[in-house]
Image (cartoon, rainbow, N blue to C red; front, side):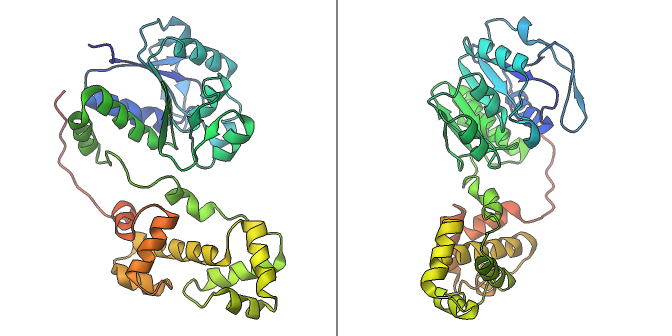
Length: 326
């Protein structure tokens, strides 16, 4: 085994099961890695879904031969309250590791250990604001799937652990090996788009203004309708200037940007669940043409409608079992 073969996962109770299982599967499928799970006390850990994971050793028993240290994440209501012993163990092992990797909210462990000070980083899209607020020295990049800053690599939520593990395999074993593993796991080698494709539907919080709430209800009720600023202002019996000011003050966007976002979300639903051609979806959601919808998707989500449908619609896929050559 070469110097890049030793991978240690630092765990404690409550760890997200998929944050561990996804990257472990990638490294194991690639071959040539020694993967070890280490907990604070050397005992099995209980994951977020109640399944216990056996570990190989305690963090204190891990020697200085670690090449890659991986720190998985924890549920949303726990990511700010990480175990001090875990932080201490991660800090000690990181000092001798070639690279340190976090998956999802594992970035909070790295930040608590001081490993993200002055660095760029990302985490689960729901936790990016909290990471930036709790650790102002971290330059959070909320739309990235993963971010490398020197020897530290942070990744977005849950399945992004698979993305970052594939990237590391590509660095260590070559792109051909990483591509073979991605094919075996039936995942993208490098998925297009960023976290905004998952965050867009939750990005607008409830406005305080009753007038603006009525405006949003009008758009949500019929995304394909005439929602030009003048038309909406007339329907709400307010001036265009006042309505525009409400959108900017409370939603930090223009009326047109909000309408575009809602139309994109309506199109997402049709693309995910139906078989309507893209031009028909565009007309149904008020875009007028497929090209107009394509440009809107690229602005809002960073991917085209066709690419979005290919990735997210429900379809039965059957693949013959095989395993890449180690």
